[in-house]
Length: 420
Image 1 (cartoon, one colour):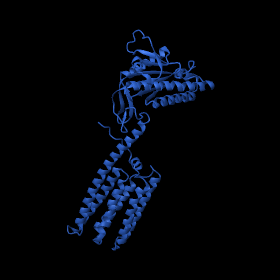
Image 2 (cartoon, helix red, strand yellow):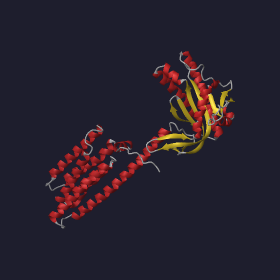
Image 3 (cartoon, one colour):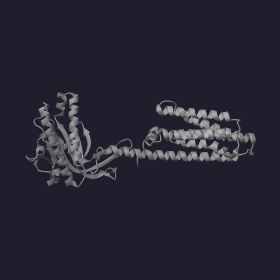
């Protein structure tokens, strides 16, 4: 079941869709103001012309209040402009119903502000405000019709037209509210999808096999080559050096590992303390293994150069431990509706942690499972595999080999002495 879209704030939705711009918000209000001016000019009865001008002033005041809230977002009463608009329209309609003017064009002039302000309120993408406006106007309109019927009886001129106008307004309000909810839902889903796509693209690059047509694929079983890189002696570094230095070195190490992994089409899954966990999904298993080993070799070469610079600056070397494994995992984007993240689970992940522990016990720089080593082909470069003796009773750890690049491969030199 698809997760429900997030409850985006109305102001945020309007802002992101461009409906909160000055032109979008105030152009309809300017049109309504012109209509009200026309209503006052066309009304030749003079019995309530002064009240029309007062209504125009009230509407101009509501527009000014809305403008003040727009420039001071979050301040001022939220519902007051909507209430003033509804009161203004209610007054114009009630006056038109109870004090009839020349019916030629008067109905259109009196009804148009009600419908225009209904559409204007919808631009805020807040169904509650639109429902408030519609409810107040409908109640006032219905009350005016009931009062006119009680005073004049069924023979009141134009009463049927006004009743039809009220029914039309109620129908229009229903359509507008339904459309607003559908639009909010569609915009929320689109915004969420776009934000997830932008966020996930940072760690799920194209070509990994986890993305299709710009969308991240769901969780499913697939083969992957797994890489874990840790800093050897990081606890000792943390004790002997300042926090700012350690954080700077850690960020530098992460940047190097991330660049090497993504350059070979891999995916950095997560950072755990001083460690980096990455996976290679693209291609068949031998291609995955070759890419993973090339990434590890590149990491070694980059850190070899980095440690030369650190030695010249009198800084301790940063030495790494790389562990590699291959197997079938359950991988994809796990989305619980509140958070979406790349997730890789399965026995192969547990085996990788055991290989890493064995590498630390043996003091290895690059350790891999026998399964991974057997996948390596000519595309991985020159390397020698030395089998590591299995510890008695350790039946859960896969057969481990130490991958030692040939002498012409400088990636073997991942640092000098142990980090002090």
